[in-house]
Length: 403
Image 1 (cartoon, one colour):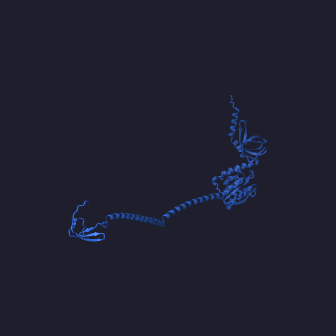
Image 2 (cartoon, helix red, strand yellow):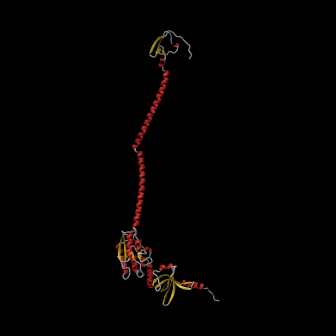
Image 3 (tube, one colour):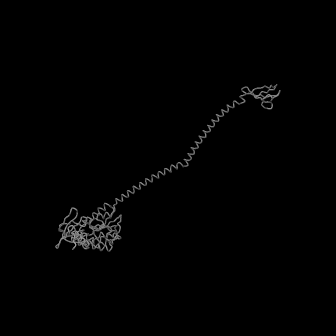
């Protein structure tokens, strides 16, 4: 009995076969757009047809960046993507990742071929990219004189740094002779000696931008000794010149911002550095003044004049203390002397004599204190308060006195 499969299994098997086909995974189909619908989810549903048939197509919202124009019914386009099966409906369709107008599609194929060839030659290698100078003084510009690109560059550069010198080489940027004009502009500005070169133009179709996809322009950019910033078209536009340049800018205005440093930032940095320096100097001056005042106080304290003054003060104080001590000593000595005088008065012989007592000496000058010390007829000297009396001993009499 033959095997029986479900519809889902068959559709899944067919989708797997489509997904494994290399040609169907990356294919470009040209035709006329029909049944074009922009869904609210952002997806685009449409069909491509020619005289021989029709194929259903869808471009999901996440791939919309691959569509550079507003697609409508009747447009002749080239859609690139993969062909696969939508299992629910059991039909195959093209899942588009990029869509270009038919004439542009052929140019796009040339663009991819040129890009691959130059990339294999190493012209896009990062090791050959030159750094863009931070403070460019001379900026060369290769673009048309009448386009908006040069005005945008002048406006942005004048706002960021009015002191930078802009040197314009008026080049043809599309049509016959454009690639030769662009190459000549790069060579002239490179020989002139600018700091950086901006090569670009405003937006347009792939046909308008094609001069910047030429191999001659790419080689001129690669061989240029001066760093080059490419600024071709709008942000979604990409040319061979963008890959060959040292730096790509999405727009001419962005290229001016990359090439010309904002002098206001430098002024703000200088102002900030100045304020920081002034603050540091003020702090240093404050601490130096503190140290000078400290050393001044110490020097004043240790100066010879201060030392002499201090010694004099101490000497005067010592002198005052000495005089005070001497006066105290004299006062106490006088007090003691008065006491001693009073005490001596009680012991003074003169006071005794004044009280009626007398002092008797014998002929030998010895004091007579006992009767036994004299003999009859002996001459005695009697001392009284106002003189001496000579007396002759007539006799003696011993008496007993209680002491």
